[in-house]
Length: 316
Image 1 (cartoon, helix red, strand yellow):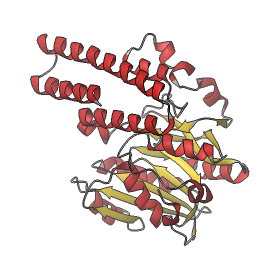
Image 2 (cartoon, helix red, strand yellow; image 1 turned 135 degrees about the horizontal axis):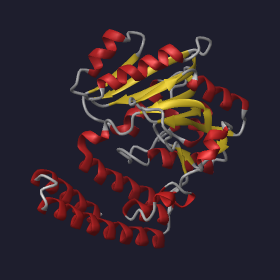
Image 3 (cartoon, helix red, strand yellow; image 1 turned 120 degrees about the horizontal axis):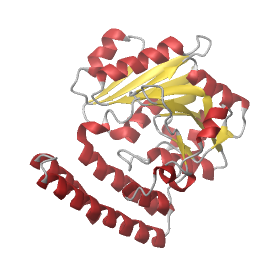
């Protein structure tokens, strides 16, 4: 997390860091969108950090995008570790973290940089995200609450799932097209000032995957910077293409990361209560999986994997 590790040789306006794991075709589309659509007057470098993919991603980058700075790892360093590696190599005044399952539309990254340049108190920004079919996707969230943990397992009504109670911002704010303050953007795309990272430090590599952007945003807010969503910047997010390759393992990783976040920022009463909610949720999921197995709606292998994940999460 040491900010002194951030590269100091500032040569570019914007550094775009993309951490990839086994999504070669999506990565190609992502890099192509950045190179094609980011305005020429914004001096931009693209840094791809490949986390030991076995699908030919590094060779694809070398062959199709020779101008891209490729850092090919021999082991998976996770989202935080990979992005920190890219940040250390970056030379931009502004630094963008972009998931490989995204595609920028138009000059989205330039729009985010423009907002940061024009808004002195803004330290971190995110775009409006949309699904592959162009439909609405929540792009910004409030910091975690007990209600949000409850809705993860007990979705009482679809309106509540998309409400403030579940950490969502109303769609009308996105549709208005005006930047609005948020707690944190989704980690699929976010842009920060270099001086903010120098002040608050790099991503916490104790988070292998998930919650690292929430932790970062909490540190940015604590340091006095504003965080915004800028709906005029639009980015397609294909959602979870890397993590779905090992869904149950990632489910366990998600809750390990959440508990790490709670240990850092939340009190003992909150942590006690959230564990009770999670254990109730895991008991409910175990019952659902067993029913599905009996009805032949799930294979034994799939059921065993899911049950093992539930037991691990319940024991955390």
